[in-house]
Length: 132
Image (cartoon, rainbow, N blue to C red; front, side, top):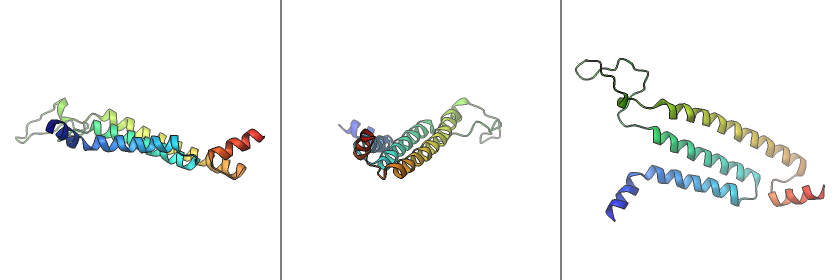
């Protein structure tokens, strides 16, 4: 039992990301307001980005740009295990840009929907669209 508990405590950041993902998923599925759905989507995307960044983290590692890293004695020591994998950081920077663009576009659509139908509630929108 203590092994399971120590594993849970050691990986607390992953549990936090899972909780954030579930909050975002709940917001997208259960809420009827379009703005709340959009915010839920943004929370979900942020949790995914945080998860991937934490997976790419390596303790006591350096960036791969430093080609002439020296050890304590001044000798050049280049080992692939000493470097952080830059792929996760690059992909997450792209994901952040896509997330911001998606959020902005979705909010712009919500504004246009509100201007036309005077509501952001899903049920009312369905009723008004079926009347047209």
